[in-house]
Length: 134
Image (cartoon, rainbow, N blue to C red; front, side, top):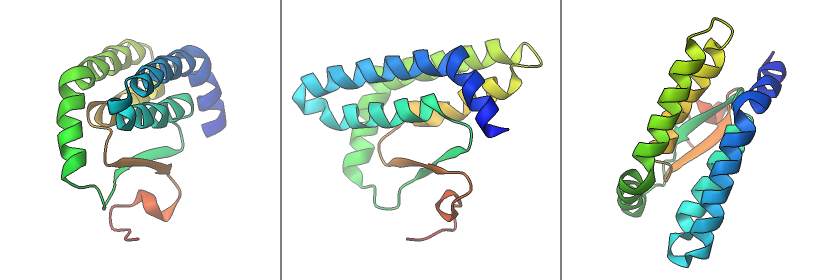
């Protein structure tokens, strides 16, 4: 079922979202000082391509630099990306068939707001659970 949802997601929304994140990542790599944001963009792009069966979790080793970077990201891009995901999620949830895709958009809001210090893991791996320790 995950594969079917991911394929439909890829056609309806995933490819365009991932392309947007990749373009943003390339721009961040060109502006050398924003390379950490570019890495986060590429990570989110991979998640935007194939979101079903994956989850986002907070990394235990994220420090103060991730917090400062997240505040900068939130001001510059995070709010706009989150609003885009919320708008698309509402639009998908209008139809009965689109509800899983709307939920996937809502699931992407936290990582689009503050991507640094987070990682994307398979939903069925032990690392997906908050009690899991490295």
